[in-house]
Length: 135
Ligand code: TYD
Image 1 (cartoon, helix red, strand yellow):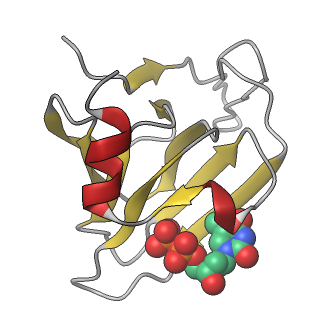
Image 2 (tube, rainbow, N blue to C red):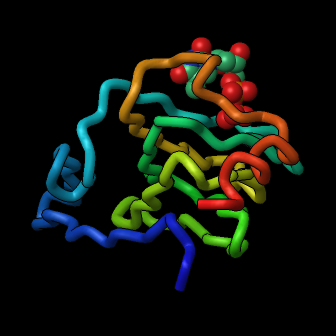
């Protein structure tokens, strides 16, 4: 298993009133997060992402609905389905990722270790392979 990403399953704090899930930095999320964004209202058939990073670590949670993530760390590829608010996909900087098969109700929550910086994106696949295939 050489994939750098990994799935973390967390417990829901449900009771007779309903469900509650908590994410804490350096606990269920193995890094400190400076930025949160969410992807929703995704049009059918859309595939997005298509990048890796130099520094940014991310945690992806489909809080409602479902989507799939294609991962590639230059050594291995994998398809992961996110279909539960208690399933977290941790992405390392060297995980090229593409998200697809969004259900119409999907809200994909992303926690990121760094503020938004376009310079931290590797959007060229060949460049990604050159940078990370040696490590
Ligand atoms: P984009 O990088 O295309 O999203 P994805 O990689 O998931 O397909 O982001 C869409 C737009 O939003 C793009 O113009 C950059 C901007 N953006 C920010 O300004 N801040 C952010 O934190 C993110 C993730 C995107």
